[in-house]
Image (cartoon, rainbow, N blue to C red; front, side):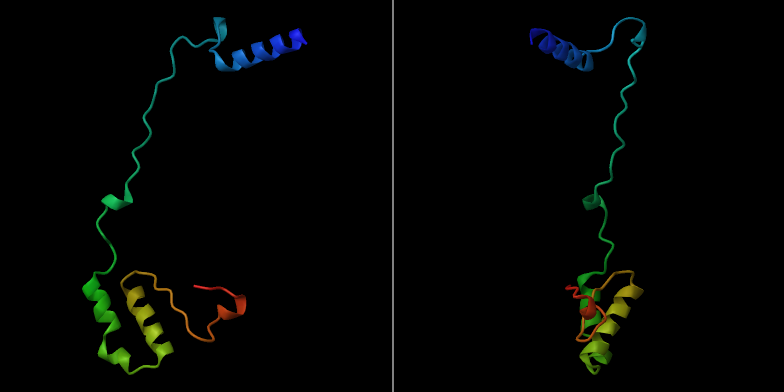
Length: 101
């Protein structure tokens, strides 16, 4: 029992301690700093401003449309500005899959 414990300990120490002799490298590997990641909070806001959003939602031409047409119009306006707008309406194609927004 003592012999197996000693072998396990030697095996563990060989994993943890650096190698000796001819297998050991002459110079340690250079330490490289990780590439700085860009913080998303440091970027300027790229979405539409609150005034632009109010302009989209309160446009006179969309108030005369049905709710489904209004949602599609809003989605098209946001798409023109490069912003995803998730919209749902009764009977949409997501209802058959049981997907909720």
